[in-house]
Image (cartoon, rainbow, N blue to C red; front, side, top):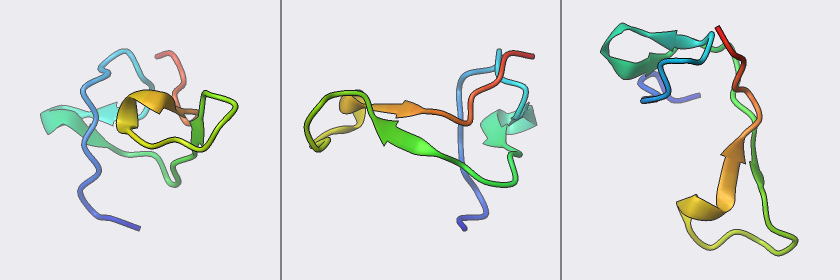
Length: 50
């Protein structure tokens, strides 16, 4: 897994200083019924409210 996964969503439980994601794993899905072709068509299922 990438060492430096960045995240700007500081309301997430996995958010750490310097916009780092400190989750042990990251789960991203397409939020459309088709295959995603750009980042705006994806959602982070790892997100948890602080």
